[in-house]
Amino acid sequence: MMNATPDRAVPFQRDGGVLLVGGIPADRLAERVGTTPFFAYDRGLISERVATVRAALPEDIHLSYAVKANPMPAVLQHVSALVDGFDVASAGELREALNSTMPAGHVTFAGPGKTTAELRQAVAAGVTVEVESENELARVREVGELLGVRARIALRVNPDFAIRGSAMHMGGGPQQFGIDSERIPGVLTAVADAELDFQGFHVFAGSQNLDAESICQAQRRTVDLVLKLAAAAPGPLRYLNLGGGFGIPYAARDRPLDLAPISANLAELMDTAIRSELPSARVVIELGRYLVGEAGVYLTRVVDRKESRGRTYLVVDGGLHHQLAASGNFGQKIRRNYPVQLATGADRAERETVDVVGCLCTPLDLLGDRVSLPPARVGDLVAIFCAGAYGMTASPTAFLGHPAPAEVLV
Image (cartoon, rainbow, N blue to C red):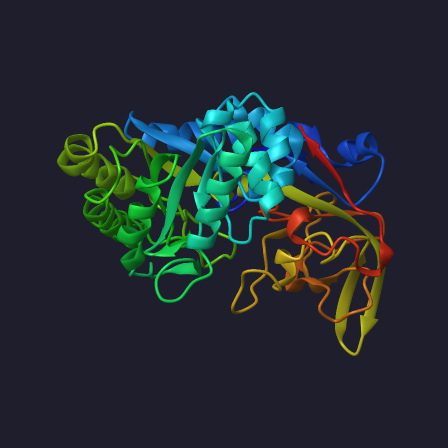
């Protein structure tokens, strides 16, 4: 019997005791892939999430995808038809973005430490470089002059406020990200004196936030800040990236982000400030994890089952070398389990408390700490959910020489 009411943190359905991914039973999908472990991304769930966000945003706000969340080429091809822009953070991501259907003019390149070679690629491609420092600005100018191209730039601003509730703070105080807001007027003077195609500003204060009011407050303060900075700009703002930071629920105690107040707040900001004060600006909300995170699952097979002094261990053929975040070693201050379920055999009536551990020679390789599951057998598949963002590419895949996992979009 198919479960038509999936768990709130796990938007996948089941057919009896077998997990369905894109409508395909997990055991059959494993045969199709030909190996375990692997990541599987459900294109239908991605499309549904993008549609939900689109419905919540005012019509004249553009939606950009942060490629770093999941740069799998098939995912980018799918998402490129659903969103208005891509943001990349390396030359490799830039190459994949340009291989998609996304126009170069709707691609932005952010992140500290861009090399001159990367800047040459970006300027030659015609994407917008989000400048992170005065030194980077000088190098972009030199690259543009060398190539005979008027480089498209925006300034990434490090605001004078932080966003509470974020798992990672990327604004406020000293940061490697962006130019301190109090330095922006002086930088704008340098921009005005250079042959640069100034587009506007990007302000991003924090990520993985489940508190709608703190996101709304950050958006209000961002708009206030940008209106002040725009007075010193060398021309009308044509680009304003308000950031994102929308979080997803990983643990049982997490509550899904309520989009309704964010939608109302953005509509008010557009009505009362942005349309009148910045009429030429292409206003952008940039999301990564929120669009793809819950649409992914990491499937790994039980290869051993052992008892040790009163604890039961399920040893799987995957581990933190593929899914570092689920082990608690990426982006968590206090370790909490990602949602973990059996992908096969989940209809067994009994329950037991087990530790799900990977195949690496380190005690850090813990994917599920004292989780309650039906009794698992060697050969069963275990599903680690919320694996659609910051999975394989945020993990030490070369650690101990195990092969990289496969990825599929279904």
